[in-house]
Image (tube, rainbow, N blue to C red; front, side):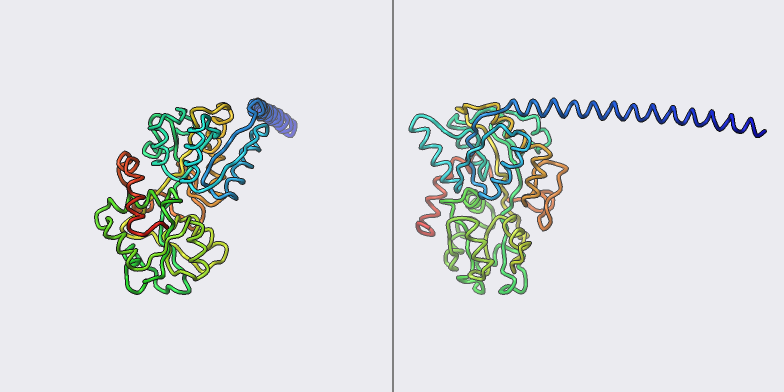
Length: 353
């Protein structure tokens, strides 16, 4: 009995050891295949090289982080950045076009209306990134000239030292109690603000009467969203009309500030990315677009503090995803064709601010 038991144990051990060896061999084979695939991918990435002119309205610090993440995968691409407000970035591109040569290879700016204008001028390259398949259809151009990269809602920012009860409506900005205590970015500088004016002026319950009401109640207008958030965080103003990620970021830094998604809804922009038609480094430009839309690129966006646009990537703390709030929107063609007229009317109402 004892001999039989020993033989049975030995056989079981051999079987177990054999299976283990087979499993280890299988894992090693899989690991080697993965390593080999990664090595091939890394070699392919290194083959993409040269200078890439990147024009953007993203804050400089955020653009720097994005480029650093891109360069970890594509170390041989030298990215040179021009950064300003969307309206000034587009003005520079238009000036370069008039001079005979657009210098930008890739543009990442506030809103799809900006890209619709450039598309109409036939200044954008059609490129349907394989990474764009996970982006909702209504947030990318069907012709592939641009694709949204993140979701940014314009919300109400409040200084919590000054505002003890958070409002739930945009109408608070017209109330006597908030007279001379609110601030917003200028549509003459900010693409997000220009988009917002187009949407608010065409939304039932708002319109130009609402915007005139803001002016009559002492709404201040300043150059960009960054200046708005600083005015609210410092207590200079109680309320701000501003993009959500800046409020969440400032709150996380310890400022006495909070954000409200008003019940009527919020305008959103998607900060699209596109390749200029005259790019002289299409390979690097396509690699850059692919990276921004990839899972790694979208995780980078979330780490920086933006709500990702790609399905399946979690927003950062303090921000809602697009499925969690009401969206105020307008017809893209109308908003694009009326952009300059809207800015002129804004100037007529608010002055040249």
